[in-house]
Length: 423
Image (cartoon, rainbow, N blue to C red; front, side, top):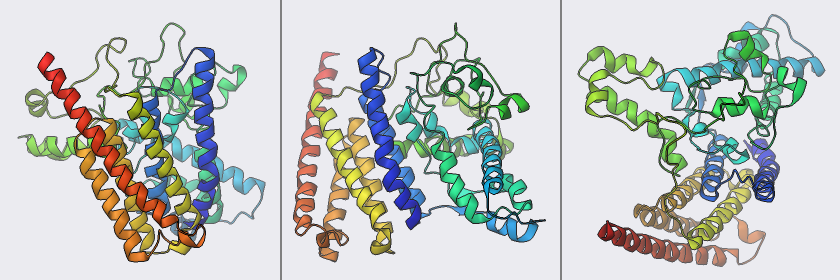
């Protein structure tokens, strides 16, 4: 937990700088692929994901360590081949876990957030799930366990394998010659994120593209079929926490509403998007049928709101950076209080971006909780020992944040009311 937090403390600013550089490069080249609110939503999703991971809020049904202890036929001494085998097995496992997430209703909920952006850029790579509480596919690492690859090696290679998937989420790199036959490139992954019928459910590979070619899921990016991004049933929100559980909530509702007893049980493991016939007829959902003619999610936002959301995001990044740098000092149960504060903050920011009046409620809860934490501890998780008097600055932030959010909620209410009168 503490080690992963230290890694993220270095990785986060690197990812943020690269995201902003892509934004600048797109502007400079006259091909901006990064919408501001979409970027903030993606970065917010990344914050929730790494917070959840650091807190360890998931359980492996079968742990890799158990498989090594019980099933290893030999033990590989630490060295190049140990790490190479670990990397290849992780990539093989990643292909199948990724494919299952796309092809079955229940597991799509764990992956929907990654595809929820209607853009394709480095920021959307940070849209990662917080809805995985039970990791049940560890058995795909069986080849490494049989060979006795130590658990510590998997723990080191796993985040490196994940980080290596960041760079190819971009539209600014074309096809890459002979590398197209070896590794996953931006061209391959643009296909994967596209909702064009010919591209759907293709190119699941994470580092090496040959898994798709081996298992029949490869599709080349075609010159005459420009990829269109998102999901066919758009999420219609910037809120990553809502997105993470939106599909699961739909499955629960459909299972409850259907009159067919068999459908109540099989809905979970049917192909992604499948719904009971009686429910689909009575409760139809909006679905994109013409990928070249639909309105992207883009609620009205003033320049002031754009600026304020960035200010809020910077504060969240500062809070989480302190968290990752001081996990051991904060300890338990403090780390879980801190994590709850981060989740409340992200929910409040993105709810305001959606122009929901409930944003004021969530912002108030976040700030009251923050004030409570300062009051009960005497400062903000020991931060006064680094910067004397910082708690007063943090308390002032809580008050100002609430007032500004109230201002925007009131302003949005007036604007929406006036628009209704006009129409």
